[in-house]
Length: 336
Image 1 (cartoon, helix red, strand yellow):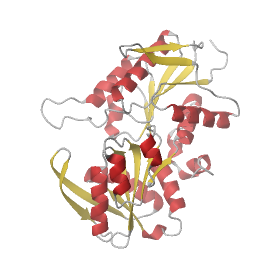
Image 2 (image 1 turned 30 degrees about the vertical axis):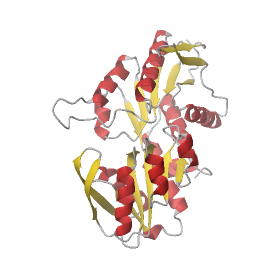
Image 3 (image 1 turned 180 degrees about the vertical axis):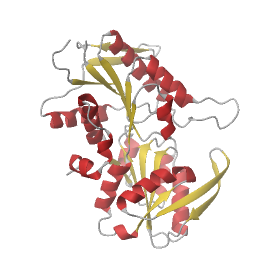
């Protein structure tokens, strides 16, 4: 067993740029080189996943960097198989760093004979030998209770608050935070409190999944620069419609801050053509070429907060301290 156990990172194929960025930030914080463990995660001809770790990891504190984004099934299986490989290689502890936790939207039974996949995935992660999970903005906070292992759920709202204070420093008094539905009020209220801004809600009613029958604005947005806050943007239909409704109710500008930019199907085209001045997402999901090229989509880095959270877990210090502006501010100084 190593005399001094250092945190070691290993990455799947889901988001290599973020994994490399986390390693670079940890190198900066540690004052020495922190790299990704040499390994290969490949597929046989029938797409069966194969993992081989080339370095000795016996007795090491291992961190698997792997969001379970599109393709969700492949990336989830990569995570589980990497965990199994590390467990059978006698790693001392295995932590899964999952910036975007897929299958989280199915966190309860909304109808008869439907699954709760968030709980199923939690069980699979536990059975694979993973002992801790580090993630960001779970779709619902209660998903932490689906796990029988510790879960550290980071929040993007402190990062968003720093960015908003920088981007709107001359007009913060005109900013209003908007929740795109009643279920997201807690998330929007948290951001509004951080930047000392008022709060409004866009209440939507659905006739059936994927279709919005009616949208109502609860609150006066006249003359306000509206900032819509949510955890996931998938096809962007609801988001773009909400932006139109806010403009119709007198908003001067509409921006959106979304943690996880799934942006599937026609999402990028919709955002580009929408009335929104900007959509700000994090790099929890690897950006496609279309996302990177979109003129009104901006990406905020999560590597600084993830790198510091990994180090805090490794040395046994507080992760929740990263939610405080006076702690997070210096970490993002010169970045936002």
